[in-house]
Length: 286
Image (spheres, rainbow, N blue to C red):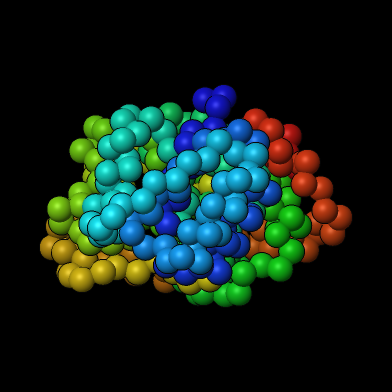
């Protein structure tokens, strides 16, 4: 797994968040990485202008598509994934801010264990993957290079999560195909559809893990739409109790503290080249 897979960015309606996302994507992702900005008819004139300017100057291999009529969040992403076949992908929310090295670290994580179906990075607003406190939405970090360096210095153990979280996620194509893909017929939101896909892949013996060496920030958590919460409870009767137990027990507490300690000890000098290039181990990146 030497090459970074295509990065899928479903375009949203928040123009300022999209602008910040694209700027961070440019700075924190290896040059020539393939990026697909897919617009379900969401971006307005300002958003499209932001995309056009970014496409004109990016060093990434980026393309943009737009639907004339929206088909809905989950259905739109399901179509994107089908277009990718059984290829591995990285899905990045358009209101997320990927920190330097995010893509390379996620790819390195997935390469360490072929049983990993999904790898989710830390997030300041990522529910089970939240840092510095679990289940809380905290401000976007103001020293991203320092935090990225601290995360990359952690030993890579990749503990289990109840399911993937939708701020950013690596999806293994072979696992996705065997599980039947994203169920856009049942769920309206990518948030709920990803949980469902995670649970189906886990049922087939795959793993949903935290990539503790990567961090992707976000201003808020993903949200379910329509009847998604109830539908998840019907299909997966133990899901809500399992999620609540995980949040209460906080099995990642010690790991979260290790990241806090590494962040406190990290130098403050900006070293963007540290995270450029091919996927590498955290030991090599620290």
